Every structure is written in C-alpha cells, then in structure tokens.
Image (cartoon, rainbow, N blue to C red; front, top):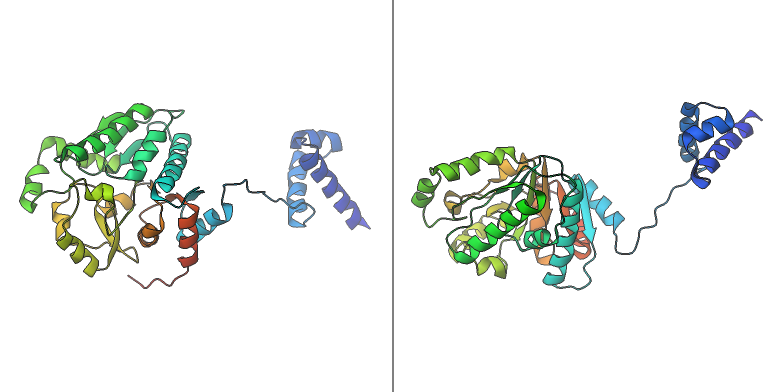
Length: 324
C-alpha cells in the first residue's frame, strides 16, 4: 500500500515540475518537502518511466546523425546541417554558416585562433561570422600563403577578416605554403618574422581547418599553392586519402610522410592534434574518405558537415580499423 503513495508523490512532483513549470524550490514549499527530496523524486520519475522525455527534432536538424558521429568517432561535438541542393556550392554555404554560428557562440575570451589559410569552407565561415560576445586574443595563420598573388590575397583576407570580427590581433605567416625547394624552406624558416609565427602555434586554443581530398579542389588547383601531379601520385601510392593544411594521412588516420613535407611551411599534424579544440568544416561525398580518416586519426574534435556526408560517414563508421 505504501508503494502507491510513493508513486503518487513522485507523479505529483513531476506534474508540478514538468506540466505546471514550477521551480524545485516552489514545489518544496508547496508540498512541505526538502528541495533535495524534490530533485530525488524527479530523477525517480524518469528512472521508473513515470516521465518520458522526448525531443522532437525541428526540420533541418539531424540529432541522430550527430549523436552517431560523436559516439563512433569520439568527437566532442558534431554539427550536421541540411544542404538544400546536392552541389558543392550549396554544401559550402550551409556548413560555412553553421560553423560561423558555432564559433561565434562558443568563443572564449582571450582565445587564440589558428586558421588554415586555404579552404573554401573556411572562406564561407569567415564571410558568415558575426562578432562574438567576447574578444579573442590573436588569429594565427597556420599555413603560408605568399608567392602567388591570388593565394596571398585569399590567405591574408581570411586571417585579417577573422581578426577584425573577433577583435583579435592578426598574425600573418609571410611565407609560401609550399616552397620551390627544400633549400628555400630552410632559408625562409630562419626569418625572424616566420620563426615568431611558427612559435605561436603552441598557443593556439581553437583551430579552424578544412579537409581536402587527395585530388585538390578547383580552388586549390588554380591557386598555385598545390603539389605537382608526380607528388600527388607518390602520396596516392603511399595510401594518402586526404590532407589538412597540405599534411596528408591515410584511410586509417596515420600521417603519410613524403618528400613534399620538406617543402611545406605550416602546422604539422602532431601539432594540430595537441590543440584543445580543432573544428573541421568539410562536406561533400568526394571528401568522405578524407573526413573519416581525419576523425579516425584523432586530429579533430568538432566536425561541421552536411546531412548527406554525415549519413555516409555514419554508415561506414563501423568498418574495422587495423592497428597502426
């Protein structure tokens, strides 16, 4: 008999809290029980199925896909947005806007932002950014972008615009992303201004990166900031499926080292993986192998992508991964 009275009290507390929207302190006064008891009874209401909480996902949101990606790839956050058209431009617009909202709403005061300088998705992110509630400290360019005028303009625009929006100091990496020779790189990385930026990589608390497929996008291919066909063939033969900042990795997330690494001026993957929060903004089915590999390698903690790409990643997430 006592059991029915316990159940009634649990249900009454749940009714007041969930249906009548009373606070726990108000329920405590109304029923003459402690607030700790109210909290305990609310938990029992859910544990015993007296209360069942469901979330009706609004149209255009994909909570199940996000949960699957977080669980299967050990992400701290996954943001999946709807691409209204199956085109690269539509996907870039959708994920860029979503990433901009995420960064604006989660930026911490004094954040040091690292920005990969060559990414169409990051360009959309910056174009959609609104000033955050608190200012950042610095925005650091993570990959060189000088040499080709188009490259330099793009890289400088991204870094300077992000710094302006976030109230931060821009830190430009005044060097090419990839040099003509090993000797050229060796000379450039002794320049005091380049050394200063490279040393600041260790300060980055939030990195914003794109993920590239092995075959470069038209934007990269036209920039001059790219590898030769022979170098891409070499990387492909070594198992590379994608890159972040011209640092390549294979399908299981292991870095692929090649001769081109000795000509790159930018952040390396082990450095990137040590950054507390790495947000990758990438979508499109042609990038699925690269995105999956980047997550398997533990290089990113947050993924912003589209629903079609997310579905493909979730379907293939349970493929076995061989040991490194």
